[in-house]
Image 1 (tube, rainbow, N blue to C red):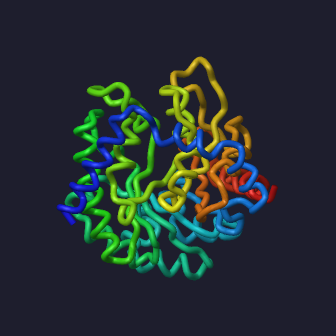
Image 2: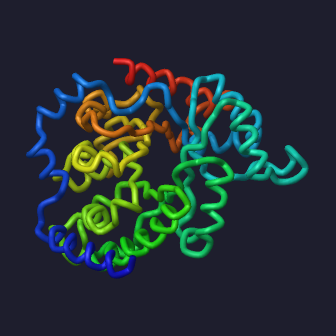
Length: 322
């Protein structure tokens, strides 16, 4: 694995430093034809598999517990769950809930675990235990929402790609898929090579057999606003099978903010989602996962974040039914 990975990285690094992003290349080649083909063939985000990232309703998971929350999510219509930790308030059971108990609650409510965000430090020090947890919960993916590296250099991202290749191979050996979830910073340019986008270095130097991506659509558009020159959908068109998961998070334009947008409930913003879901093309299948980082903080409690979850589910369903 090590020798193959280094050879793979060397070839990809030459491409990465050429100064042309995969997104721009894909946009040029694919253009309007892919959009038309996607519209004719149907969308590649299944409307019957809408998922939720539990970070969106973290206040309810903590205070009400998994039993109440999962039952309510099933009632709303969510089908799949992405975890952001496996704990709840210990006063609910008089102790912490176990992974086996969470799995039974999923099964009892007809829900499926689709993935989980774990800290990158856990991948370094506790990888097999995280893979164990994924298998107990029956999820096919396990990932991190941390940036690949804290060093915004080509060398830093090449080193990170090597790490992810190792972790990804271990996940593959267990029948799982390892993924990385982006924020905006991954779309910045390298501090040591200003023509090279960090995301491109990571994408091109991770082994597609073992490392996958979860595109957070909101943060990708923030990245486009801050570091222009790419189209988020073009990454997916170019390598559709590397993107099994999306975060469907909405944003409302705010020119006064450096990020260019505020996070809002799905359907209340102006990100071009209808265009995005067609521009990604018809190939592969991508589970759409609703997330709203601000849901517990910006809405009245109760019903708070669970009400946002219900309204956003309806808006996503409407989008995917078009």
